[in-house]
Image (cartoon, rainbow, N blue to C red):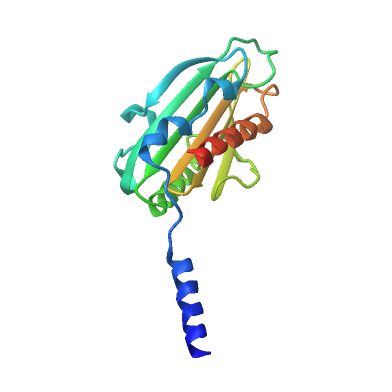
Length: 190
């Protein structure tokens, strides 16, 4: 009886002590949206490693929290103020040595999203995505105001983000959520 209890305790401790698998650095470029994910009419105008200019403070240090690298893809399509849906899309992923670095990076996204420079920002509710998620929207005032939605989330040792923009009233949070889910599927298959 003692022997069985000891064996069960060892199995339980071994099962609890393991860490989640990590996304390998070699699959980073497949962790962003691809042309097939965004639909007809979109043109990819950048697909490559993130550069220093791709990240704002507090996420500007390329070595932050054990970061190993980042990838970004950007798409656009023609349209007018009457065009429904996004006109510009951005998809990014950052990989870290471990989930702890990704957790810290998502906190940095939270700080970025709270920037006082975005006075008209609002938090948007995003259904479960990855291990933790946050979202926001804001409008850039103009004769024809432009609406932005940004969703950032953490999955294992990665943070990912989708940003969509289109004319106010023509682009919706559901557009951003649908794209974020497609990107999450890519991360899970990575």
